[in-house]
Length: 264
Ligand code: IPE
Ligand code: IPE
Ligand code: MG
Image (tube, protein in one colour):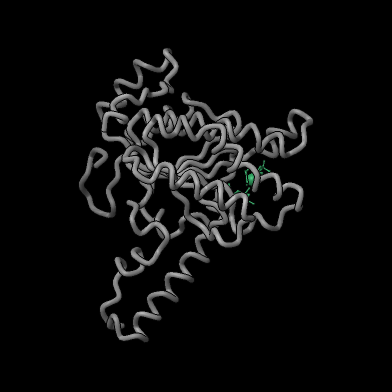
C-alpha cells in the first residue's frame, strides 16, 4: 500500500500537448486500444540500415506509447508484436525479434512497475524460445498485482488460430456434456478466446499506411473504430496518438442503432 503511494509516475506528456490533453480527458477515452505496430523495416530501409535497426527503434516507441497511453487513462493497450505468420521471415530477423521482449523488459520493467502497469500476453507462449518466454513470464509475475493499465503483448498471436482453438474447447465441452449445443452463444465463444478477461478493443490503430488486419483480433474488432496512419512505427509519437484519440472522440459509434450522437 505504502509502496504504491510512493511510486513516482513517469510523465509521458510533452508540455506542448498538455492543453489538448486536458480537453481530451473531459471526453470518454477508448477503454481498450489495440495497435498493429508496422513499418519498422521500411523505417530502417529509408536510412539504409538493416531491418533489425528498425525493430530496435520500434521498441522505444513501445515504451513511449505505453507511458502515454497509461497517462491518458487507457485501461488496456494491446500491441501486435509478432504474428503466427511472421515465422515466414528470415531466421536472423526472427532471432532478433525474439530477443526484443527480453531487452525491452530488462530495460523498462522498473518503469512499468513505477507506473502500475500490468504486463500480459496473448498468443502461444509454448512455441517461443525459452529466453523470450522467460522474460515475458518474469514481467507478468513482477506486475501481476498492479492494477493500472494492462499492457498486453500479442506475441506469436494469430486470430484464426485463436478462434480455431476456441471452437475446439467449446466442442470438447459439448462432447463432455458440460454444455448443450443449443446453449452456445457469442458469449461462449468470447469466453473461450485468449482475451476472455478483456473488453473488446474500442480503437484499432495500424501504422505504416497498410490497410489490413493481418490476422489480428478478427472476432474482437467487430465494432472497433479503425484508424490508419502513414507514420512508420519507429516515428509514431505522442502527438500522432493524440490526433487519433481526438478523432475517435469525434466519431459517432452507433453499434447498428440510430442512437448515439456521441461516443458511449
Ligand atoms: C512491424 O514492422 C514489426 C513486425 C511485424 C514484427 P515490419 O517488420 O513489418 O516492417 P515493414 O512492414 O517491413 O516496414
Ligand atoms: C503484422 O505486420 C504483424 C505485426 C505487426 C506483428 P506484418 O508486417 O507482418 O503484416 P503484413 O505481412 O504486412 O500483412
Ligand atoms: Mg510490416
